[in-house]
Image 1: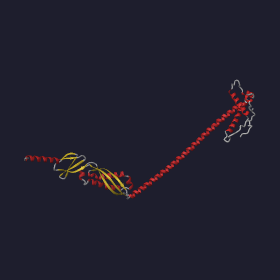
Image 2: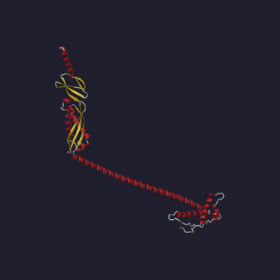
Image 3: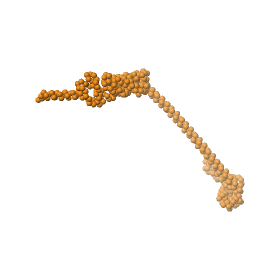
Image 4: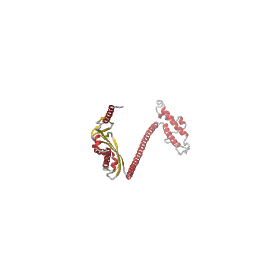
Length: 344
């Protein structure tokens, strides 16, 4: 059974607990509390444990000090060239001064949204549609400067404003699509024409280079052919000079060699003729053997010991008694021997 003293003690404990509960305030991180005394602002509580005067001070406004995003609803904007577009966006803001944000404006977020919408109409209405669609960053910068300056007295910092969508009317979108397609077709036609032009130029340059290379090849071939003919003529001249020298020294076999060479060349021409499949040998065998004997005699004298046969002209008389002579060689008469048979 509690006595009177015990009841008093319990009441005192309860009162002390109530006083402690009313005087201690815990503020979470990212928030600030305003304190009012008899309805008037006195101070701001920062995050953590705070002590106030119980039953006299009270918490006025709990302000969120973190950056907050607000959706700006869609609205119609008439541009400077009388085009109607639908625009929406988002706004980022942060409370920098809790007492001013709490007591300078009523319904802070609603005020920021309406302020942003008003300035969107003002800024975007002063621009043409093409500028509206192509200069979105400049629009955001202008809106940020204007809205931030207007919200400054509220203790609020507007950190960013972004225009999300700009929707022209349907007929205007169709016209823009047709314009875009026409522009792309124009660019495609230009690119095609440029491609054909470059292809034609490359083809002409290729043909030009081909003709130049062919001409250079023909020139080089002609030069080498003329050089070959020149070397051949020089060799023929030297051979003729040697034969003439031998003839001047009285060597009749040299003439036989010359005649036999021409004779064999003529026979070769007959044999390799494309129209001749069969032909008869049109000569006397003794004449050919005599000519070949003359060649043999020349070769023998060319490689013989010159000490024993110093002068070829001195063998002129001996050739008549050589084996070739006895086998029927044709003596030199100053004329090419004519074939005695028919050639078919």
